[in-house]
Length: 133
Image (tube, rainbow, N blue to C red; front, side, top):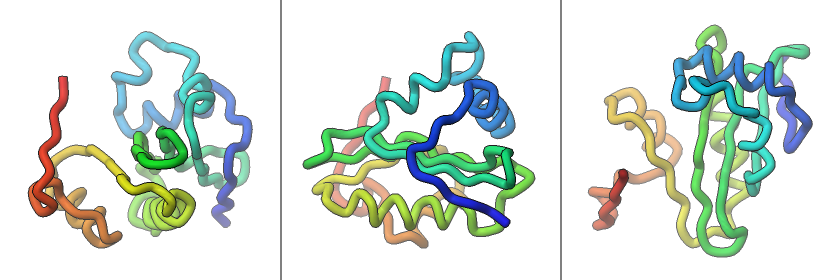
């Protein structure tokens, strides 16, 4: 049974395993202390299978105007089971105060369909423009 927990202590090793499982090497290549990612988060929610961290959503922002959904991860062994959807729906309720909710992600049809199914809109559909470096 999957258990969801807000802002619980997570070890570096558990975070490292989750980020590596989804291939996010930019987070893990220099093996930084990944727990610092959570220290700067306004909100985060985790999914657990027993003592195994299998999902995480992390939001940064100012707590008033903007909420940036920084990470949404589900271990590949647990994908397509509704865990990502639950993490997103719970967090969208948590950050409903925000005037701007922003998320950037890979440009694939499946990813786009997933976020649109949750009511999110492509920047192109809102008249907005985004930039990156």
